[in-house]
Structure formats: structure tokens, C-alpha cells
Image 1 (cartoon, one colour):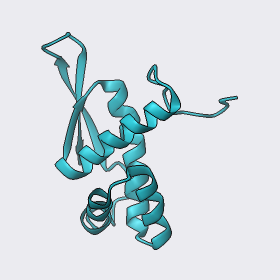
Image 2: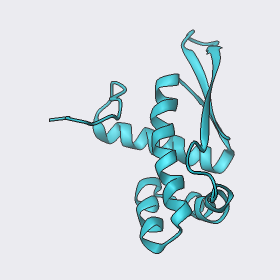
Image 3: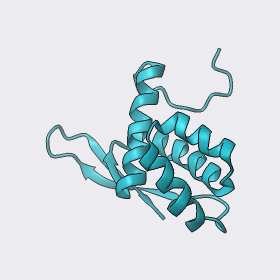
Length: 116
């Protein structure tokens, strides 16, 4: 049962959803922004907020937890060495979702996930 589970399904299986969200989180960490649909942006935002909270702690267990999600040494290193200390004094709300309007190819709504 899915009682009290807040992660939107995004019309995907669990493994595919985890892979897509981890990829978008990696892109945000490495490039500073991600353009995607609003639903995916909100789901990725939840994951990234959790990762940054772990990075603020900075201990070895948090680093291993973050690497288990991201599966990328470079992204994990940047998260813990640059992004975590940057938001050390901020209690939450590290990212924002800005709506961009319809996408040119298929007309789907698009949003940009960026750091605050």
C-alpha cells in the first residue's frame, strides 16, 4: 500500500522514475539548471532538497546515501564540497521551479528547476 507516500508516479515504473529523477538531479547539480515538465521538476525538487540536506550534514554516512542515489562521483563531490556549504545557514528551500510556457516541439508545459 502507498499510504502517506507523496512521490508522484509520473506514469512510470518505480525503477524508471528513480533513474529519471536521479539523472535530473545530477544535471541540476552539475549544470545549475534543468528544463523539464512541471510535474517532473517538482518531483526532482523533492529529491534535490533531501540531497542538499544530507550535504549540509557532510558526514560519511550522508555522502554514501547521496552516492547511492546519484551514482556519480563527480556530482556527489560537487554536492558536498560546493553546494552543501553554500546552503549551510539556510533551513530549506534550496531550489525553485519557474514556469516557462509551452515547449516548441509538442506544446507540453515546460518548467525550469534552478538553485535559489
